[in-house]
Length: 298
Ligand SMILES: NC(=O)c1ccc[n+]([C@@H]2O[C@H](COP(=O)([O-])OP(=O)(O)OC[C@H]3O[C@@H](n4cnc5c(N)ncnc54)[C@H](OP(=O)(O)O)[C@@H]3O)[C@@H](O)[C@H]2O)c1
Image (cartoon, rainbow, N blue to C red; front, side, top):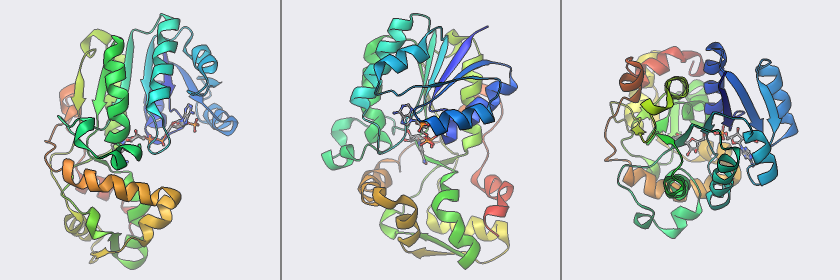
């Protein structure tokens, strides 16, 4: 039976993808760099192999890659040095010699190049600033790769810094300088697509760079209106950075720098329903997601 390795399995997307692969009886190897992460993976995925490995430690990464057939990679914003992590992953895949497909989550507005964004934005290692470093290295490796390019907001952002003040103050709080008309994709849809790509034959998807965005663009006023419709209360958008500051902590300044590029360069990202293309089922709209998760907001 094929073995699928997930690097980033304790994370939001990695764990949701693992949930689906477990349901499909796929043989999984899940990795965390932390002991506590290993423990939580063992509890949540008792049928999976779990290993401790750190992508800054080539030996541990090579041990995790041994005997693996397929690989899914998701790396976190702000902290990932892709100039080290991606070459380490490529080396480990080459040494294993068994990997028939790598699936990598990216977020790059189509056509955008590293030279189009400032050094300050690149230094944030957030979003495209991170993925535009990894992708050329993976492309040049000649390895069998499929990209899922989620060049928009993931709906789980709502739970981190938007939902609480909606619930307690009927206000959507975000700094106005970050406002833009954006597309949104649900994390559940992303996980569905990744699981399908990893369970189809690799040849169906190798060499593809699937763009996954939402059908519609929404600015903060639009999101507040959708929230009003769903909750039946008047939700007001307010120019306020307090909630974002609290939830981002030390990364707040880097995120604000990142937004100077994000709020500009994502405006022209087209609609692209990767779930419809790959699974034949259309993606969840933001209104549907808000309705499904109404408990977050009331
Ligand atoms: N938020 C958005 O709207 C949005 C939109 C589009 C794309 N994205 C992209 O989504 C990605 C983040 O996805 P996510 O939220 O699922 O990530 P996440 O929850 O932050 O998970 C990151 C994973 O990386 C693992 N990791 C961290 N350091 C490691 C190390 N040294 N060695 C091995 N593993 C390590 C973590 O595992 P351990 O800590 O257990 O080792 C964790 O499982 C980013 O690339 C971002 O650009 C986000």
